Every structure is written in C-alpha cells, then in structure tokens.
Image 1 (cartoon, rainbow, N blue to C red):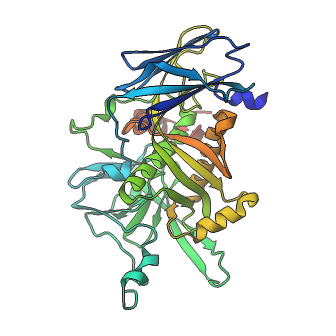
Image 2 (cartoon, rainbow, N blue to C red; image 1 turned 60 degrees about the vertical axis):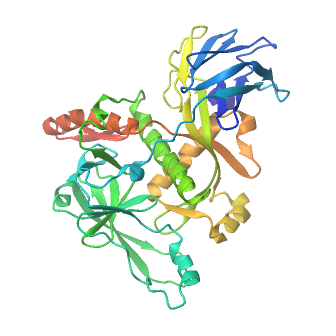
Length: 439
C-alpha cells in the first residue's frame, strides 16, 4: 500500500519519433473495468475522463492524438490499465542546451552560487570559449602517436580571457574578485590504488556566503567550477530576459530539479555531438558511483502524483481536488537505464562497464553524485511497477525544462536573501538555502 501511495496514479509517455504513446492509469482510479474516455483537441491538449474526474494534459505544439487509435493494452493488470496511443507529430522540438552549450564569446556573464544565489564571479567576458578533449582522450594518445606521449604530465589550462569547457566543468582564470566571494579549503584524500601510496591533496573552494563547495583550485591561477554547483547568468541585453521567467515549484525541490535539468541536458548534448550513450558518473578521484545508459531523447512525459498538492514530482498537477478538473504540462524528457555501483549484486555489470573504454566518464563532486543517486531512485519509485526495471537495470526519466527556467527562481530569491543577511546576523539553513532571521 505504501508503494502504491507514492506511485503516480496517471502516467503518460509519448515518443515523437515513433509517433506512439503509452498511458497508464492506476487501478484505484479506474475501478471495476470502468470506461476511460481519451480524446485530443486541436490546441494540443489530451483529455482523460474517468469516474474520478477529468484530467487534462497540455502537449507541446504540433503533437496530437489520432482519435481512432487508442486501445486498451492486454498488458493491463490488477495494478492498473494500460492504453496504447498513436500520435500525429507535425514538428520536432529541440532540447534546450545546458550551461556549457550556452556560453559564447564576447558575452558578459555572472557566475552565481547555486545554493544561495550569491554572485561568485561578476561581469566575465571571454575572448575564447573552447572545448576540452573528452574524458578518455589520454587513453587514446598511444593509438595516434608513434612517439612517446607529448601530453604526459601536462595540463590544458586557460589563459586570461579564456573559458575551457569540460564535460561537467568549466575552467576559468582566477580574478581579484574571487578573494571576496570564495573561501579556500584544503581537502586531503587517500587514493584507493595500492600501487600509488601517495596522498593527493585537493584544494576546494566554497562559497563565502553559504559554505557550499563550488570549485576546485587546479593551480594558483586556475579554478575548476562544476556545472552542478553554479548558475551562469548573462547580462540582460534583451536577448534573454530571464527576469520574466518563473518556476512553479516549492523551494525544497529546486535543487533536485536543477540537477535533473543539468544532467539531462548534458546527456543529450554529448550523445548528439559524439554519439555517446553510456556514461559513468564519477567522483573527482575517478570512483564510479552510477552507470547511465541513455535510451531515448524524443520522449514527452506527464503524470499526476498520488499527492497532487506536493511539488516533489517532475510534473505537478494544477488542481488537487478529486472529481474536479486537473491539468498538467507534458514536458520533454530523456529515458535512461542506470545501475548503482554500490549494488553488490551487479558487480559483474559494473566490472564490464569500468573496463569498456567507450563508457564516457562524467566527474562530479561527491555530494552531487549522492544527490543524483537519490534523484534517480525517487523518480523510478514513482513510475508504474512494470516500467521500473529492464533486465538488470533500473529505469527512469529525466526531465528537460526550458532554458534558464530553474536559474530564474534563484535570482528572484537573491534580493530577499541578501536583504535578510544585511539585517539579521544569525544564519540558518532553510531547505536548500542559507538565509538569516532573528531567533
């Protein structure tokens, strides 16, 4: 009963390239074989009528249901009913780009702490924005060079005015403003390899306002910012008016949505640019935490949570009263399979992936790896039971929201947070934010 209570009671998956879809309705919504009426309107909306009420899904423009092609699937069980749908797709939409995909030459940006919204780097413009070689490039040098590795023990570092883009991080030259916004911390970690009995010292940098870890100091002049820890805000010049965007969500789910958006966008970009579909989310020391297999990037998903009043589902219902009209927005998502490396039962799968050079590493801070792991497990748990597993892998959907939607919510809170810090000396943490108030 507890598992069913947390599962979304209506789940919709649409594949635009295949022009097909799957609708699942839980058994406690459709009782005793009651009829379900599904119809599509010209304005790209899908109406689902049950005994409990009418549920409306707003589809993206150009996507409609073929009215005569909705049939109940024989796969329906005591847990719920499945319906197969056929779609008419008039236009394909592109996935919004990540922070790395949006950075451009000669555009002024400010870099903000993702946890509290404090400005870390202000008014930075770059003369060069260059991609770094992918994570496995060192392993391929011997196959291309007929002489000793010319890049051995050498790092690719940015000069002043450069922005070097990794798969999950940005390399920037330090400026004088960093001394006022970042705090230097020494972190000593022992490497696991028995052959290398030496201590590796990593110098981490945290936000001076909220103490969240944001970056790593590669050298005295170069900083490595992870995209899961920062927000990048372009100067308002009319091209991207972020002040008019908003996110309808509770503050305690903003961090989760930000991680989901960031990871999903990067998976789509890397798979499109390099034809890579298998990824290993790792700590900075190279320890694999999660193995991801990207399946689909043309998916639209929508769902009505069991508790529609909560904002912890990737789609929130607009109305929470039973037997009344409820609506939600179908959003673009990627479908992924994943394995947690901590699962001892799947050690053989993990060993095979770790030896496969085609698996693309995605280094992230340890804390972000743990948060993503919780995000994946939570998203899987909300799916219908028959969709949660595929062979040895868990299944989930990562939602891709519109460009900069999540960033804006933090910017709207920035004024309030800054005001609180000016007047109240005692700081406490509320949700994902550091703020101040009198006790």
